[in-house]
Image (cartoon, rainbow, N blue to C red; front, side):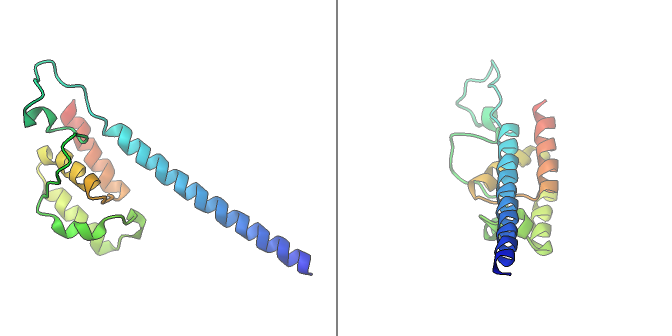
Length: 136
């Protein structure tokens, strides 16, 4: 009887560890996809590199200063996985996102990255679509 219980416990633990590793690898894969999508585009030939206009649409920049978009309340979401957001927190993010000008989306995403605030997948996809459209 003891052997059967031990085998069942071992089986359950194996499944739990496998699910945890799968979840972590999926999160890492999602983060890598975001990083690829936000890679710094090539600088236009007519850009000298010293003006903010050239870097305005980039999500990655050497400037590490955080710019807020009247969204200081979002700092409470720092280092929280989007699956743990409450509906109210999701709504806070959506409210800020939908009130931004399209030209501010890339800067806002950069600001969120620097503040370690993760967007839910649906908002992230919309934001990335806007950034890609503005770049092309």
